[in-house]
Image 1 (tube, rainbow over the protein chains, first blue to last red):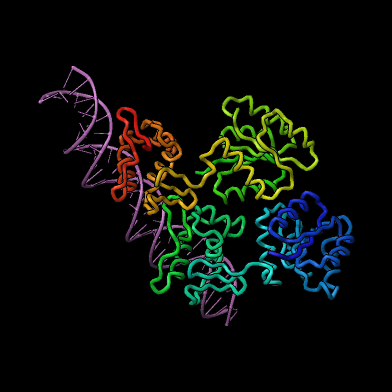
Image 2 (image 1 turned 90 degrees about the vertical axis):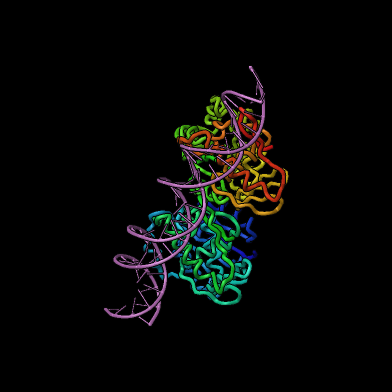
Length: 226
Length: 226
DNA sequence: TCTTAATGTTACAGAAATATTACAAATTAA
DNA sequence: TTAATTTGTAATATTTCTGTAACATTAAGA
């Protein structure tokens, strides 16, 4: 995985953590601790994506954002905003400043990584891996399509995410709780039995024309992709 | 069960990151944000390993460490210290407090995971290996599968746990009571003769195509894996 | 060899886990 | 807005697992 990511964030510990982990994933990363300097360096660095803190010592994230959008060379630079909890989430969410996504601190690196990839997938598909394949099952993350033996299959959003999850961890058994945590949006409370129903729906969709079952039930443990 | 890890660390973002990722690897994880509370919970949780921040709001990592080493039940608990860069690394390194390893922030999860496994491999070798193997018998804890001579065998949950138990302690004889205590969920009351039935079921499942018997009855003592 | 305690085997009823279905509420599309 | 789709849950059906009791067999000492 190649691609360049720039970080503007004043909390050094966060920068360190994120930068280090992103580098371990193969990104080239550069960063700045404040807005003005960040803007300058960013334009030299020419990243594929920007992680931008909402509250900076000099400029606000919004200001940085606006500045970038004015620059023809960076008009389309994907931006993910980092916000502290309770920091007027709604404002940011409804924002027309052209932020592509935002994430509230504290966040796990996995969360961040997933969002980065999701955003890059849209803006710069070559940078990120797109197709998940297992046997004759294929999931295209860009086009959001699923195929079994080259035949397209229709899935609802939840079944899609569920299958995506299994495909990124084939053969491994996951408990209902693990599945819930990963596949469902955070802080959503659903019965763990609900998983069963979605598994059923997924099974029904991907078990096409007498092809073999691909989802295994492991009694007392959970489910796995074969 | 792959092993339990406790985390004492006050930076919530780090806890989240580490906890989530360790759980995805199959560990059972619990955590606390400060030293005093952490010590209490840890002793209830009985982890196989402790991740301990060097700088905590109330106690220092060293204090926590000393407390643990004083407690006979946790004298040998493996500890990995988390330190910020430049935090008197040498002191920690040369430390006689019985820290098993330390890692400086920021770290990538891969680094941490590798160290955890290295430490566990020394202290508790059964925990880290995903595959338990004895002669031509193999149990995969991640995929929850069992093979005899490469042929997959179907086991019920209890037989699976029973076999897992024997495989972590091959050749050793266990009394029915010992087996009950370890393999059955706590505070469940079952007749000790029930073991015999499960042994029978397990034997039936793993004694495939005339292969030799793998479970030995030791009259008046119990059972063992050969 | 006989006796007896320990273990092996079997069958079965209840328990527990999962599968399936149907439906109403929520969400999205038209 | 209405219509269509998706979602979560509860109720019900089905499958699989568990523990026990009853009976059979074995091992070991007298």
